[in-house]
Every structure is written in structure tokens, then in C-alpha cells.
Image (cartoon, rainbow, N blue to C red; front, side, top):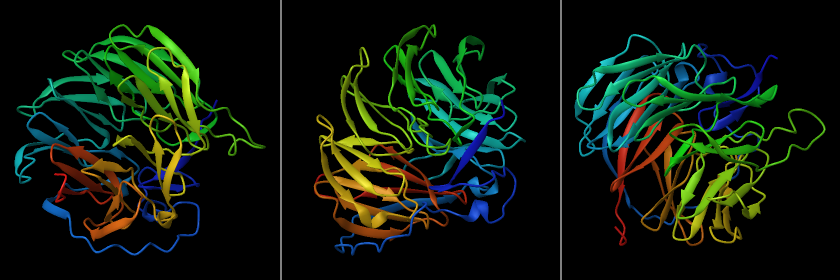
Length: 392
């Protein structure tokens, strides 16, 4: 069965044909499917501090790609669409090593603090594992299928998933396939899949049909499967329930979300439902100070009580501005938009504290690091910021 996709471009949603190489108007469109709201007035604080900036080269505007920097050990790892992989010093952005793989990179970078492996996926479905100390190639694994999420690196396994529903666990040291399973995908789904989450001895995978799986990360054996969101609606587009949001674990609770569905909190052990909230999202969530922060499909930033699911506040002024995932840092909520701006919100009530122009192009990745956070734009610009607050 042919699979059709709803393209998610940069920080926004685009319902049209997906072009992997066309730099036309599709790839320059970053907006949610709603009329942009008037942004609220900022309180005038000046807490966002740009530590350094670097141009990585071609970004997601040169063709749809899942590029995301990652903190691991003593470096920040980042990739360009054109095939370059970098290890950068977190303190000043100096290049510790760089590699040109000679082929376009579709997704990455996946790293793990205790494993000296950085993994990216090429357009042809090949996984490339690089030594985090030197950048030299450790292994290659040719899956021969389109990779649909950033590869996830664990202490023993690298987990990859493909657009046709295959999930693969590879030996982190050698790249050999240890286990795999495949699930049928709907005929219409959101472009891209949620990256798996490794927590303890389990790997959690959200599916395009709104289901969530827990499997052994070592053997691939299934622990449980649950349905987070039921498909409803009069046509296939209205029934989209893709679990495109990366699962999130805090203590004994697993949080997940679906597009045109719900945010849900589950017991980690057996998937028993703790609560559901009617919020549709496709972006990673964050948790801090007892609050679960979610960016809705329309761009609103929503704070839910992490224990009960009760709505605490909604910042509606961001509707239609192509917002990124939220981060919770030092009593602030940090979020980016489609024009390269970074915003700081009060985590208690969602009030806008500061707005700052940081990168050219849409903010496509916002990644927390030790005492700082990284911002990657659709044009391949990487900036690293810190936050000056009384809590830091």
C-alpha cells in the first residue's frame, strides 16, 4: 500500500506534496494552519545570553531532514544536510573534529553519554556510527529503507526506525542487527516518526496509529502495548492520530502525545492510564517544577500539572507563529519560532518575559545542555545560549 504523508516542515505544518530536494516555496513555508495571533508584549527582561554562533552549512531548507544537535560527554554533535558532522566545544563552539561523509544526511545526531558512538542516517537508509573522540567511522549499517526518526543510542543498542514501520535494534559496538519488528503503517500519516526513548531496560516507541509500545532494549521482546488515541473523523485526514512526539519519562510516569489526539500520562511499569488531556501535539515535551510543557499543533504553549493533567495556563499569543518544542530552564520556559526568535516565559503563569532574535530561519531544534541550550535553525545556523536568572 502506498503511504501518503502530511509534511511537517521546520517548526510548522504544511499539507501538500513533499519535496526532498526542492528549495521552492514549500520549504520556505513555516506556519501553523491558523491565522497568526498578535504576540504578547514582553516584560523587558534581558536574561538570554548568546554564548556563541556557528554556521554548519546546509540545513533542512535544502530538503526535508531531521537534523538535531546533541550533547554527549565533552561535546556538542551536529550535522548538516550536505553530509558534514561536527563535534564542537560547548564553551566556545570551537571545532574538535569534523567529517564530510560525502552523502546527504537525513537524520541525526544520536549520542549517549557513556558510549563513544555518534550516529547519523543518510538519505539512502544507511546508518553511520562515528567515534566521538576522533570522528572516524566505526561501522555502517545499510537498512535500505528511509529512516524516519533520529537514531537513538543506548549503552548496548542503537535503535532506528523506518518510514515503513520497521524498528531495529543494532549492536552499539559493531552495528549488527540484533532484533527487529515491523508494524503496519496507515496510508496517511505525519511525515517523520517520534524518536524511540530508552529508559532503563526498555525502549518506548510511538506508532503512526496512535499506539505506544514498550520492548526490551536488549532483546526486543515486547513488554506491553497500549492505545493512546483512537482515530475519529469523517475522512483519513481527520482520523490522523500519529504519535510523532517523543515519549518522556519522569520517575515512574511515562508521558506521550499524539497529533489530533491527547497528551497522556501512563504508569511506566504496565501502561495503566493516569490521566489524559485534550491537547494535540507532534513536538517533544518538557517537564520541570511539577509542570508538563507542551507546544500544541496550533503553536500554543500549554502547561499541564504533571501529576493530575489539569490545565495550569496556555500562552495563546504564539498561535500561528510556528513554535518549537518548549524547554524548562531555571524557572523559565524557553521556546523558538519560525523567524529565528527565542522567547522566555514565566513558568508559573506563561507571561512573556523576553524576546530575542537569535538565528536566521525557523528554529527546528531546541536542545538542553549542562547550564546552556542549543538552537538550530532551518538554514543550518547553530547558536548556544545560557540563561541569567536568580535560579541559575
